[in-house]
Image (cartoon, rainbow, N blue to C red):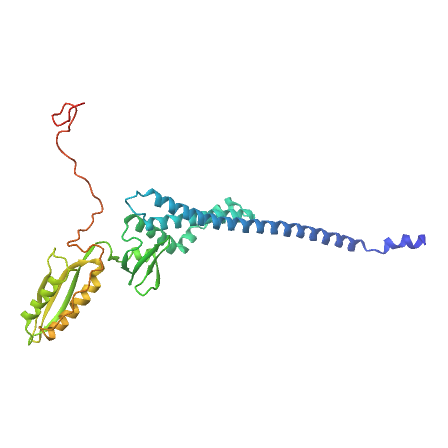
Length: 326
């Protein structure tokens, strides 16, 4: 029996023992690495969730703060609120992503070094996004339009719903969402139909030579003068533009409130068509105005109003205008 016990250890291969020990060490290290990686992943996910939440909260806080900075007489500027809120949100998210990378073992110095070395490639790859950001800043500075304005740019018309860091969001008349990059908007012609409170309506029509042109123009003049939506200052203008062998071309030019443009244009086109066929035709009464202020004329509000200083001698204690002291 003792001889058998002495022979058992000699039967075990020392190399097998060495391999088993190595595999055990590798398994232990893998378990440690997996444990640390799992902890880091959970921590990184938690940091990312916190960053997303903080970015939304900071964006809302900044928008509310900008709204409070305005005076009570001046309404908050939604354009400035959405743009600055978007910048704050992206800034907080960038800080959160850097914190996530650091939690996963990537040092911030390494990230900065890589970004510095690859700045040229990154700039070329993101030149579109960077140009959109620069265009958004220029739009915010020069204010060619604001949130709520009806504009036309890049071949699209719609009401501005939001001005973000990269894009401008429009809503068309049939309620279709249109997203246009800021660089394309700022690099194109921008037509803002909401800047001025009044606009001119031009209706061009043709009158056959066999019709009574004088009677047609006279009836149109009466219709324009009877329409309360048409402003009297500047006065309406009805003029002849062209004369051919078959017809005479005339134009009606009137000033109306911007909310009445479509309705007045439609009514004038229909009236011109009916009176061209029959100068004695019966016309429907004008529709009521859609503008909040129906008085005429409507002055355009200046961007800046400076009060003129009051000149003259100030009243003082010794001034004859001053009331006597009790």
